[in-house]
Length: 398
Image (cartoon, rainbow, N blue to C red; front, side, top):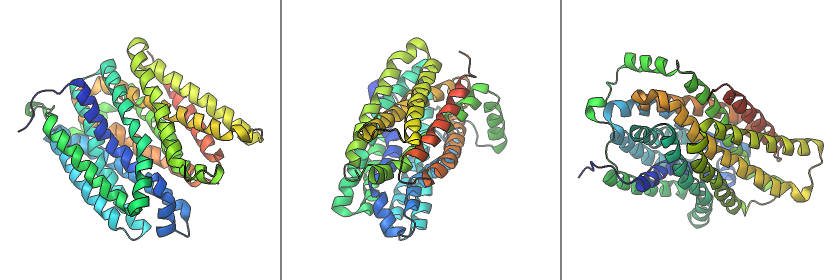
């Protein structure tokens, strides 16, 4: 039986967060496995193992270019189902991969498949909400979603201890099966047949051109690019920093959980103030705070005046700030950009997310590969990215 009635707002938030969580688990559960992957598949170039993270993100960026238009044409639910099936198949391919190159190819395809859950769920949200109301819903989704990175590395570490790093991909299959069962039984189709657009290349090109005529959309894409570049560069280097700089490889999943839980404050703050003061001031405050802290730590490290006793606590505080910045900016930037393009919500979500994600990986990979055992390259890269995003937000008028 296909559900036809809208589920409660609380269940919708939880279900959307679960769809988003497929992305987070696919990234964060792999972090504790990077040393084992390096030792097994890339012993001569261990730094290449971090490409397991960015290859997935790159594939996700490519996939988002197609899933939105497909959902505008065939409906939201069928596209999510197709993506989930491909996700399970690529997880099997990752499980049986016997070389790093094979694993990276499978991860690109896996990222392409999970794009359906990420982008189409946002289109489902836009079908039902808009403007500040959508931003508020998105804040609650991010609040639930932020709990996933808190447990994903611990989950990955536990699976590695019991059955080896390859078995993480079998758990992915189990997770997607549970989420799809919930989604199929409870979520109704939000795009009526009469509102669907034919999958016509000329129509897609025209709609894309229309999308980029909106100044707010272009600025939002650029700001999202820089914001995600800061996040992905941090995720690529984080495990190495904990292991080589602070000698805390074993406790890394616990500290990552602490950082993730601490950053939930960003979603809480955003959900409480965005309806009152608007999206732009919240975004500006988040960028300015993180930039100031980053420049302070960068100056202490570059001049050699960082007190060793404070180095690790300050890095934890900085990481919480960076993750909180994501919670206070990405949902708001999406809501700002989607407001004038609700009639092409699927395509808009696809193009914006695709361009921002692929471009952010291009920016983040060099920063990650510059990792030298310290946090200095990462801090410098993040400072540039956040400063650029803050400058872009100055252009947006209230």
